[in-house]
Image (cartoon, rainbow, N blue to C red; front, side, top):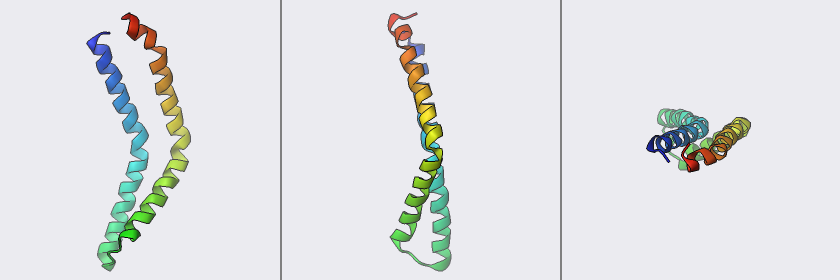
Length: 91
């Protein structure tokens, strides 16, 4: 196995992980900022007020993005499994 192959495989794994995780995390960040702004304006500091809407929004985003996320993971897995003989044999 060539060191460049290992670097390429690691880079592709990191990019795929970022692509799969980013939609859900972005929704959580945006909702968290909005809830934080509302809490600052109204001076309501209840912890469940910030936690529950974020969880509901993230579950909704997951439900919407799930087909794309599964497709992306399947593409990555197929590419990885297809390239096993090439990587093992070094060619």
